Every structure is written in C-alpha cells, then in structure tokens.
Image (cartoon, rainbow over the protein chains, first blue to last red):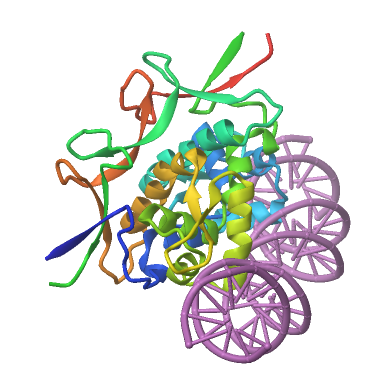
Length: 159
Length: 159
DNA sequence: CCTCTGACTATGGCAACCAATAGTCAGCAC
DNA sequence: GTGCTGACTATTGGTTGCCATAGTCAGAGG
C-alpha cells in the first residue's frame, strides 16, 4: 500500500528523512562544485585528465580526487586508449548513470544563467533540430509536462 | 553573431569557464547538501524555521546560516505572519527563483533513488492527473523533448 | 514581572574542500 | 639509459561546513 502526500503542506510529521532521501545521497556523492564542473566538461566532450583539470580550472590534486570519487560513484569510467606513437592512457567516459545527470547539470546551468547572472555573455543551450532554447522540466512517463501543482511527492509506506 | 559548439568534443581550446559558467555560480550559491535539503522541505510545504531545521535533521546554527544564504540568493523570502494568540513570526517561502529550482531538486532526487539506492523504501514522484512517475527531462521552447545527442551547448560570442 | 517557546546567535572543535608547490611514475623518443 | 610528457600523489595551509552545547531575544500567558 502506498500513501501519497501532496506537496503543499503535506506534513510528514516533522520526521527527518536523512539519508533515506535520494537528494541527500546524491549530494553526498556528487554534490560539490568541482564534481559538477567536471561533469559539465564531460558533457562538453572532455575525456582526458589534463583537459578536464585545465578546463575546470582546478588544481591537479583536486581534479584527481574528484575524478576518483566520480568513478567510485559510477558516474564516470576509466577506459584505456592509445593514440599512435603514444603510450596507453586512460580516458574518463560518462556511464549510463553519468548521462542520466544531464537534466540536473543543464538545470543548474540554466538556473544560474537566469537567476545568478554575471557580466559575461550567457551560454545558451538549444535544440539541434529547431534551435529553440532548452530547459530542464518535469515530465511523467505518460509524456505530460508536470507543473509544480500537479506534482505529487509521495512516500511509499510499508503495507 | 553566435558561435555554437557541439557537445561532443566541442573543444573550447581548454579555456576554463570559471565563474562565467552558470553551473559554477549556482553551485557557489546553493550547491551544498543542507541547502538542497532545505529546498526539498520547502517544496514539501515546510515554511517555519523549526519545521525546516527538524525535518532536514541539521543543527539550528547550520539551518539558520543556510536559510540566511538562501534568502540572500533570492531563493526564499521571509514573510511575517501570525497565528491567532501567537506573536508575529516569519515564514520562509519560495520565490520565483526558488520554484524554478524544482526540476533540479527532483532531478537530484530521482537520480539518487535510481543510481544510489539505499535500503529504504524509495520515494516516488507522480503526476497528479495520471499517476505516472515523474522525471526531470530537457525540453526546448518549441515543446520538443531534447535528447543528449540533440542538445547544442552554445556560447554566445561578441559579434 | 516571570516564564515559556520559537527563532535564532555564539563558541569550540573536527572534517572536507581548495590552492600552491613539489615529487613520483610510466613509457615512447632518442 | 636519459629526457620528456601526461597523469597523477604528497604536503602545507587556509577556508568552509558541520555538530554540539550554551546563550540570547521577543512577545504572549499567567
């Protein structure tokens, strides 16, 4: 049996969720600035340590540490490769779990551009087919776009 | 004039984006575990300091600090209210910028439930109208759902 | 006036994150 | 084998985040 709680004042009786909550676990795994920036670069197509570390603009030590954590979290994998005349190296590739973070990364990016503007030219994300700007939205498996009012935040409870 | 770079190996020449990137600014403002958990509770409908701090399960000092930062970031506002027979208090309400974070919060939640499972019963988000599970996805302003392959990560460049 | 409660503020201490610098290690070029 | 380069590892030190405990402050009830 499942009890569903409405988002609006759906009091859970002030019981903390702690690490029972997916947000908590996600933030503990990858919820820091450097990890998100590394993911941004991974989505941009950067795969090599040197490139990732330079493009994020973080020290090598931090980049190595974060990449190790991202691999441990199953977001990236280290895959060996070799260019002709070079020795074998490893590149960091997004796993399925990593690709699944795209809406989050784009959501953070879009929010920052809109609500925390800087003096710089904003980056834009657009749809290759129609050129329109792209945003993160909620969608149900039936294909409907879900607004905040139509979202039911539920907790499954033992029967 | 605008130059658009494809996501896949769209080398920007290894120039770091730094705080020119919206992800960076967003993460600096609200990119920590406690802030996200406070937002989760705000979306659940919690508005009072006591409730927020208890439901997140964080110390009062940290809750006060994060809430102050969220207000400063324009994500929450403090609104005075009074219940009959009580003195005036303040409640924390989501601003427009705060509501705009819903896809990010649900994205983090959904990812954690899927790729960082715990022993607990997962929480579910569903569509009030059809009951189907809800996920964060990318959509362009023309209404198309955008896949990773069809996403163009662009940078606007001075003409 | 005193108390009680919700909403904080203050202090001390530990751990995580970050920059900067220096050092290591593997293997292709020579 | 020596040099060079990409990919790290180690160390020092500063800043931030967190917890725990204790203290403050405002105002309704008594």
